Every structure is written in structure tokens, then in C-alpha cells.
Image (cartoon, rainbow, N blue to C red; front, side):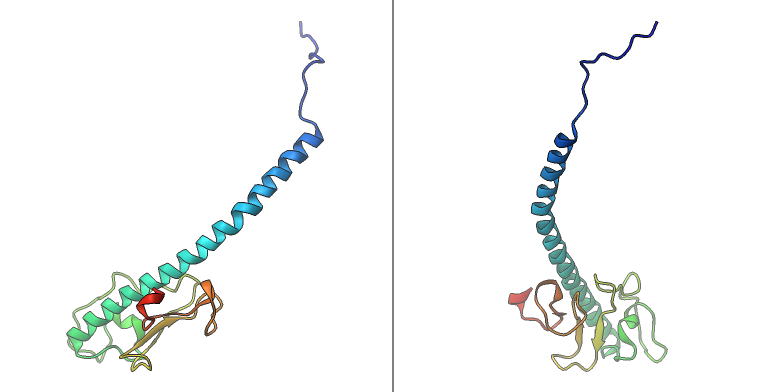
Length: 146
């Protein structure tokens, strides 16, 4: 025989659930901005690391060919042999050059205005200048910024 449920059992009240939701909301409001600020720093650091890797590949390319790739050849010359380039002992990258952490292509110019070549990304906002994750990340940045 099935006995009816005891009247002593009790669930959570609506007020108790609302208090828990408010506490969770406060925690999210406190932790969320800290987490997302770290995410922006990680993307900027990733772009700096990729630019440094491209710089090493560009130097290896120059040692083999006697010159850096032209602006028209771009960073793809580090992965796929340009038709008019001899000798070429690449590929100098394991895979085609990736986009920056914000999904845009790195910009490359040879000859450069700031050095033998210019290699940079305009950051999250994709416009010159900016601060934090919107800052430009360049191959010619002073070591104190890296």
C-alpha cells in the first residue's frame, strides 16, 4: 500500500531561490570583469608571440634568399614558395600564417617605415593607436612594451 507523502517534507521557497540567485549574480559581477580583462591580455600576448615567430621565420627566409619577401608576397612566402624566388629552402612556417587573435590578417610591409620590414596588427579595434587590447602590436615596439 502506498502511503501519502509526509506533510513534513518541504522544498525551497521562492524567496530562498531569489536570495541564491542574487548571491550568484554578485559573484558573477565581481569575477566576470577580472576574467575578461585577463582574456584581453592573453590575446595581446598571443599576438606578440606570433609576431616574434614570424620575425624569426622572416630572418631565416632572408638568410636563404638574400632579401625579405615583398609586400605583395607577404607572409605567405614563408609557407609557400613564391614563383620568382630562388633559392628557397622553406617552408619557414609549419602551416599558413594564422590571423591575429581578433581574426584579422597581420599586416606586413617590405621595405618598412620602422625597420627593414614592418609587421603589425592593429589590435582588437582594428584601428591605429589604442590602449590595452585595442593597442597596436608591432615588430618594432620597444622592448619595454613587450
